[in-house]
Length: 250
Image (tube, rainbow, N blue to C red; front, side, top):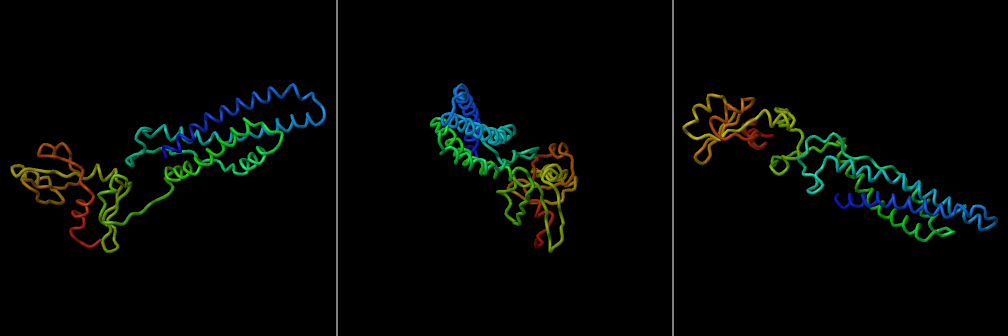
């Protein structure tokens, strides 16, 4: 993904340079428009080629815009962490300009040749062809129009990327909530023996024993009240699963 971004940014710079190169070429050709015959036809063909190249540069700028949009919400040094919860937008979909690029490649091989300009356009279009599939793949992921359903008992490694949670017991949904709701609604307290009675008075939904401490799981209990008794944390989904399912089959 980072490599695609570099390609897109380089593509943006290349597009600018190509337009400048085209403009210089056209300025040099302009006085020659007064030439008659075959020479004039060559000049006009070169200008038509330059106009096509300008159109390619304009239409491919979307890739750089998409990368800039991505860079506006993700840490560009570390890349996406998978923990981003609030992605108001992802990237821009890239226009399908395959027909235009095909025509530009065909024209690049025609005479009259503009060697530097033709070579620059070929390199630019090659870089664009590499970057676009990656940018489109990223856009498909970040537009959030696709849902991945994971059915498993082993959720520790993927808990940080989940957006919603459901427990099913014998075909019946016994719990369904978003991960935001899960993290604000459920708390686990690690408590020493001298505070256990007070902790139990706050009506935990589950209790388990650890080495020298008890672990009590609560639903919709004030965090500050629990913090006065011991160490508070967000429980794992596995711990909540045991508390809710009570050992039943899922």
